[in-house]
Image (cartoon, rainbow, N blue to C red; front, side, top):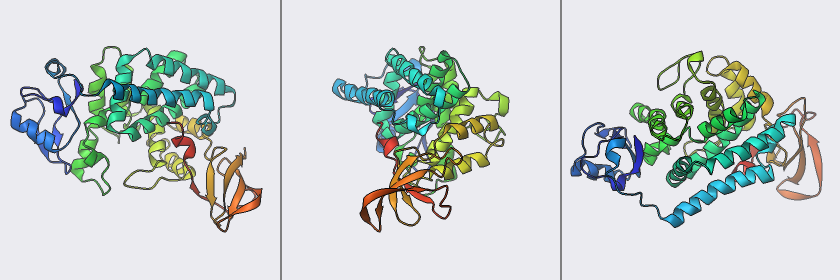
Length: 366
């Protein structure tokens, strides 16, 4: 199967996945030849992409994306990796110590590998075209995942595969209508069931690309599975899951709950970590969760924060004994800039809490 633009559909094409309305009602089923009327119904939904069977997709016209736009999108991917490598913005979020140089090396290696795999670059470009937020999330998940893999001392080849698996783990979301994907209200049971299909769609898309390693498709399929069998799409248990899928599942969960979505505000990093820890050894592999805890700098140096008494400042230094209680350099109080910035050690000021943080570090890498 492969993803194609809905505007290129012709009668006789066979869908690889049903098409649903924003309310979860199926309007066109899979595995039957499309008629002109069916294609009109798909166009009414304004769904930009659909999944079709590969053997019939040859009849579809070329994607209507200009070369200029494709170059611009590819440049965004390039810029994201260049900033990661050269500016260390993201690395400040990860406490890697002796492994930091190895992480940089792997990011460079992953970057180089992307530029040797046109199929992967093309998929990432399609993903940005559909929803740039999904790409941003995928890049975050890739960096967290590679960090965990580095601590596990995976080989360079394994780390590259893990990074690619994380970058492409949500590729199947391109077949989910945006009205469902970005719905502000609570999803209906039918809509949630449809969203869960992105794991299968991603697997099908990636399995059809000859240059992509099969384990990368498994990452797309399994990243919402849980070690107690409560995940989807297959409800597999523990050791039935691939190690990469377990790692990506942890990274995906943490970044999802600590990022703003149209339907909810982001959790603070320490809140997201608490929620992740509550699923340790139930939903997530306890050893991997422990590694992630040690890996993560909850409030990285340079992050702008607001304290519970209204003062604002920037994280100036970490406290090794308590990663969620850093030293903050205050530059604003009572809504006004202070003439002389000063430091507050939250480890010694237990009544103070960080209540807001500016995600400048995450956003500035894109």
